[in-house]
Length: 449
Image 1 (cartoon, helix red, strand yellow):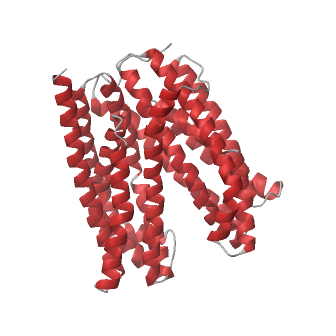
Image 2 (cartoon, rainbow, N blue to C red):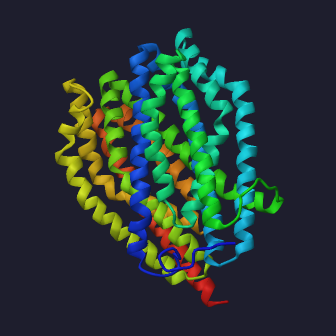
């Protein structure tokens, strides 16, 4: 089996900063194109009809469930593979690759069966318009049958991240973005598939992506990954995958909670917040790159038993996060009016979005700290705390704070934005304290052996 051992690829050696740059920049760039990909689908849906755009919007809620599972597969696979790459346990690496491959097919089959039984009822619950539901089902049914390719892409991407390879995943996201511009009009307007054409385009792109990453993984690892079942390995993988997936779901649910409370102030505030969130997500893309680099670096160093390097990686990741924040916080404060006008010319929507971006700029470094802490904890196989802090930050604290602000103190819309800032900063400090405690325990455990 081929394992990269030179300093450029062995993440247990060499400059931490150089590894972060090599791994993080491609990962962040890839996620930028992934976000642009989703915006492209929305643009083409709008070209079909308003009904198609509405149908895609509610279908995206079901689609978010696939994204949550994919995020869990990527994080869980990366954590398990990276640790044994670090310890140079070649046989275990092969077993993790094969078992993760097997779990992906199993979970994808479960999603397909559950989707065929419950997806239409969920869509009917989300909209009372029969035409909108019909369009949403046309899209969702195609995605359901091909959901395995989404999940295989995430599985193989996680394994490659563990090897320190994020360029391959970046490449398919970039190619996929441009391919989407070609395939969407082909399926929609030439083949006359309507909104289902968006799904067929995405399905073909994900099928090609999974096959490409599988080939790259074969070259990277020297073995042909194939589905396998091992009860103990599946148990350990699921203990990593499911908390990460649930953490992603808390983000989705948290978004609905926030929009519910903001909607009490009208439709324009919801639109302003929604646009502001999309802009903020683009600005936070470097954080996702940093997250990938911390996962890979910590995973391999943890597997090698180098606790001092694990601590060094965390400390330096927070410094990189600070540097990114210094660059992007001024953009959120001073460029927010210009960025908002790229999406709408409604002044009320613009004002809400600008206020949100300027307020949330104070929480930007808090988000970065959370990314670093969660990535480290996932990499050292401690995935439950990120889930706990996610439930607290996205669901419990916002519900309490928003309810009190609106119904008890009768405060206005903007008070909700400052509540979000406070909750993020509080959560980031709690995560930092907990992570430092885990690092101390790792060091003590190593020295007492």
